[in-house]
Length: 451
Ligand SMILES: Nc1ncnc2c1ncn2[C@@H]1O[C@H](COP(=O)(O)OP(=O)(O)O)[C@@H](O)[C@H]1O
Ligand SMILES: [Mg+2]
Picture 1 (cartoon, rainbow, N blue to C red):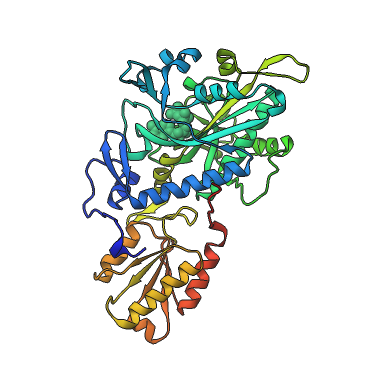
Picture 2 (cartoon, rainbow, N blue to C red):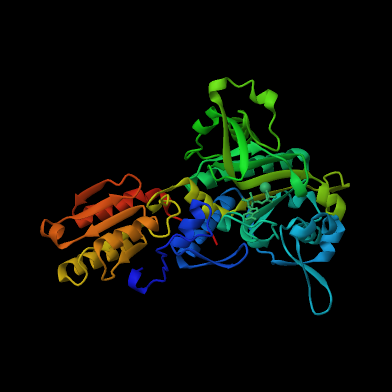
């Protein structure tokens, strides 16, 4: 993309309505525009990041054996009356009447709808296990939408639902989700810690939230500092193996880590004092096992091997895809702007032409641009007739993790400059070497959509 042809409405002033850094930076970098309280348009660069996160989520879900689909945003109230949640959900649910006077709602989650799909089409244990998921817009009429996309009213969420014959199988599905979530967040450049949580309106007795540590997080968290040393890394886990998934759960949940809702002071105090940490965290996902709560209420039964009809065991599992855009910025920025992790950056590198209109500099930039495209990389070329300082400031603000600077002086010696946004270090090298370096950096980060 050439900046002269893009739509990147960068703001000079810091918007006064934004209280936290990610909201400020998303507005300043031209990623979002507010459309209403807690409702946002995703401008091109914001949309690009959202799509990258979505692709990573799809890839990891499909890798775990979960099946993508898509349910609508509008739901009929009837199903929610069946489960008993139409009244129980309260004022967070946006209720709508159509012209026939029928009660609809803008879905805050999809347990009822997926259970209805399941009971209509599945009748035998032979069709289990089954995990279906979708990534879809949700609406919750939050009393205090704030912090931009972090606590929106309309937000984008991956929600998945497992159907299993037994409690044991369903707990394996739970563990499998935990493993896939650890992988997902690490690919996004985040450390998200699974913490024992409260089950809220979804109900059920087993649940973990995934929290990214950040001062601006809405949850108070208590943990053993040893937990932050755990890395999932690039290990391959056999998602069909109950033992392998269970081992990962044990490893990542064996140390104390809880949110304020389930915090137990006595247990916390058993940890050596120097390892006790109190901090704040952003909830970026949650997994639940809730047994037969919905299958009992809605009659989602299957015939077991003995011919008897039994309610299926279920769980639901969510990732806050739009919230993650803000969470990543909270975890990765400095006073100049965003610093995108390589796995999610909207463009792989910025190209800055120090002397637009200089035949040699223009040609070198064009060649670098074509070279990146040939490598399957996505460049953002600042080809505007602007001062170098302004171009650098824009690249820093919008978070380009790598920048190639091209100017007549360097070209005389056959070199361009490659700069890391994270360390600020620059290195001069021939253009081909810069391309080679970028190819190496991004070798492990290519996202191909599984759809
Ligand atoms: N109002 C919101 N704005 C943005 N993301 C949200 C919002 N509410 C929930 N999410 C995201 O969706 C994920 C799954 O939702 P869920 O656990 O059902 O929400 P909650 O914890 O608010 O009941 C959460 O972990 C969070 O990342
Ligand atoms: Mg939650």
